[in-house]
Length: 133
Image (tube, rainbow, N blue to C red; front, side, top):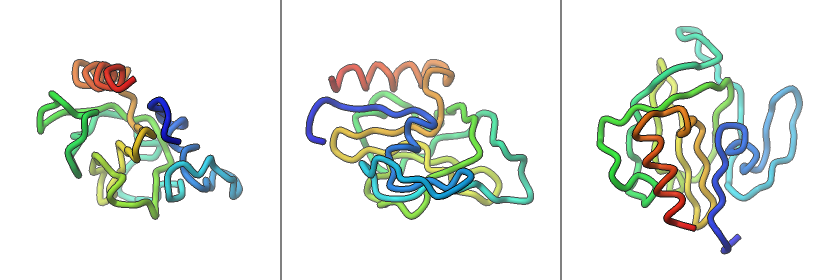
């Protein structure tokens, strides 16, 4: 906390939260408030695999130079829940589900999507992260 920026991607993001419920209740690192729970939505396929629009919840340096209609690539069955909305930078919609996609609290950053698989926009986010270091 308070040091160099830390970026967790996919499962790496999920362990930043207080608890996870994959199989059984498991303690997380507690660097972000909230839990990670299985996605439940009968109208869509889970695991969620594919491209979705990333909607901005708030401005952040991680999204510098990213256009409003950016698409990011997801591969997951679990999502953050009961989080602080002020930590949420961006999210996607999948069926009726709101998928929290990008979090930031001070130097702690988590991406549920895979920026390394998200084309030019994902590469730009990784460059933005590098500039934070």
